[in-house]
Amino acid sequence: MLDVSKMTLEQYVETFMKGGSMYQPAASKSKSIAFSYKLPDGKKVCKTLVVKDEADAEKKKREFLTNVYLGFSQPVVVKSVIPSVIPQKEEKCMVTVRDAVSSYLPTYKPTVTKSTYEAKKGDLNRICKVIGNQIVCDLDADQIQDMVNQISIKKDGTLSAPKTVKTTIISLKSLLKYCRKKKWISREDLELLTDDIKIPTAIKDSMHEQEVKASKFLEYDELGDILCLLVDNPYYFYLIRIAVLTGMRPQELLGLKKSDLYRDKHYIEVSTAVKRTEKHSDYDRSVEIGVPKNKYSRRKVPATDEVFGYFDKLENVVIASGGRRNSVRTGNEGLVVVDRNGNVPDVHSLGTNLVRYMERHGAEKFITLGMPRHCYQDYLDGLDAREDDVEKAVGHVLMGMGNKAYKNNENYLIRLLPLVEELGKNIENAYQSSLKKMELRA
Image 1: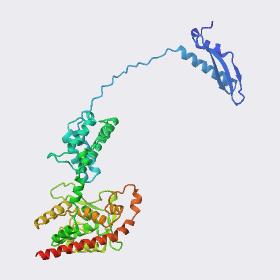
Image 2: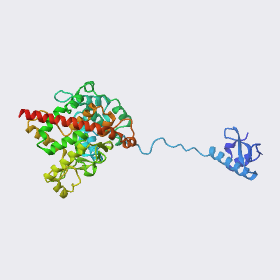
Image 3: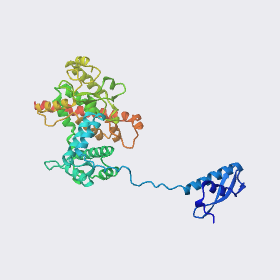
């Protein structure tokens, strides 16, 4: 019996080079050669190679047999399964929630406005008060839900505002996503911690939002009384008259440029707003002109001749105070509203001074710079305005409408304009009625 295990390479190849048959398959242009060879265990194996001609057949057959021999004659090298370098045990993440917040906030700050940053910082501070010392990678879903439950109740036992709880949950999710990017928690941990966080039933069922909305609403007669109180301060008087007939945010109204007023087309274009900035010294002002709240805030607001008339009267007030002259020096001559020093008005300071002015004059009902916006929406609702028209006029997001359609659809201006004219008449009637009541009391 032929023992191939004892053959040399030359003997093995020459032995099985002999024999074999070459043929051409019917459906093929190439030729094939069929032959057999043996393995060390005595097993006979048949093999077919595709070749061009006899010379190619001899070459390929010799290469194949050489590879077969080398395959069973060379010792098998077994690679060690033991690594040459023993990997070090991965250290457990020891980053606390407070550490994560300290790392996250500096990266978040440059991406948003100062007011948005301060709001986010406040949310994260509430989180740190409850779970700030917890290790991030040790957090579980029960701790997250317990934290939400705790921040839902104030120290005095009253319920927190639903908006506060919602924004805190949103800020928590943002923080945990940042922790995932830093590889402090796994993707699975992120899903488990952020999935199905529930707002306590007491918060969802509370009437807080309705109460807040009601506190920001003024009946026509209440607004008339307030206007009577402000008539001796024309700066506040005309600002409120404009705000309640346009529904603009205070920072949008105070950030208007003269070029934003389109009298002949009866609209105001909102493209800028006052924003708070960092003070680098005691002499720096903390406000400047920036962009509106979001992309939907860049809009056109319907404005009647009455509104533009109030703008003209406000301009006379600004000129009389010396503000317009000083605005040339400060570079703010293009703004509609400036203070007596020609500077961009500080929304917070102006609002505080407005309330203090009303307190000094014995007001029974107060108005803030933000309240006219809410009154505007409720007044137009009472005049049967379309809800989506009002929402667009005040710069709210319209669900289900794409950004392009939202931007190009301006039919709301035509539909709202006559309603704003009617609103102006209602407010003027209330104001005149309050004036008569004051005269009778005098």
